[in-house]
Length: 125
Image (cartoon, rainbow, N blue to C red; front, side, top):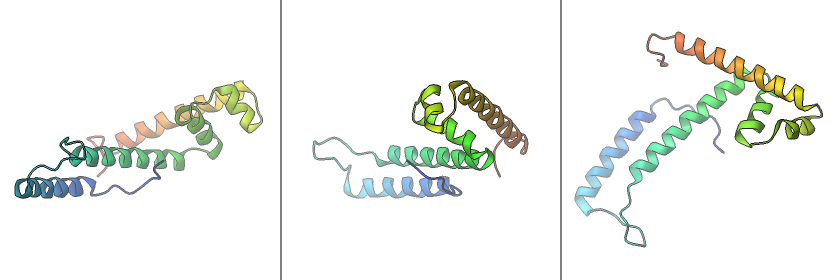
């Protein structure tokens, strides 16, 4: 599981890596794996940048929510536990787990709306 990272400049890193990869490919040819299939690491880099962005968003969400609410959301969405299983894990009922999940969802949507309203384009600057 990824921990939150500061992804400032990931686009620049990705652009540089893409440029270097293309130069290298022109010089030495297209690399292949053991089975003879062509390797395209740029797709893997794009996936990594996406995972880092998601990890950063999860980190911001963790900082914005009460710890128990975040834990309930993590267990429900990341680990796929049922509300009854979450309640048993924390020592409360299914209904209270559902209430915490609803509270977390509303808080997360409020924080996301406030964050996107902070800049005209909805992007961080």
